[in-house]
Image 1: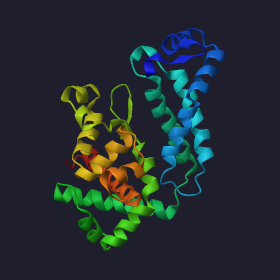
Image 2: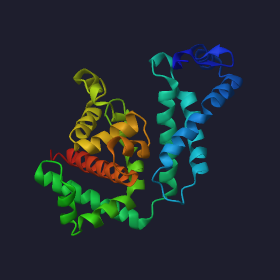
Image 3: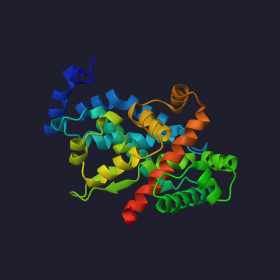
Length: 264
């Protein structure tokens, strides 16, 4: 059954949304929650990948439920965006908002993440291009093996930073990096223009990543594959995919910070 043909409580979904918008009937809301509750577990499962052991899956689900409630209240069926697509963003955002509020990242990991980001930002501003792993490692006084190990240790924080908000400046519209990761075939000039200047900058920054790192982001966030599945596609280990993901995010953070500072 196609998403457009979903029937909830015996009523086509689009019609149900219009009923809820006009009546705020709690029985309709409950039916929608029941229909999309599995989506919360799905998103929580994706977020949990690479998280430290002290982050409990059930807690992530609990945080995500609030995102689902928020999505239901704010969804506009007339904007031609499927609720599932809209809800995933809201659920993920609610999970990461709560993770930020409880400050789950150990101080030592946060410090390493900042050190990597600062090094990448400085190097790429100086070089005017993407810095290689070897160049970043050398700048930090590390062997390539030590650098790769460090990237694995900070991998959990990269998921969090992808959901950091960047503003378009248009009616205070909020855009995160993760919302701008699209299929390479979708990067049409007209589509980019419609999404505002900051989204265009993010999309361009992603397009300039090394090919493997860009591929990992697209497969994970657009094609919706797990890190393990991406490893099979690219014929490398899951831990290597985790490293590539973390490197891509660190590079993006550095590039976007430089853009904000007017270096590029």
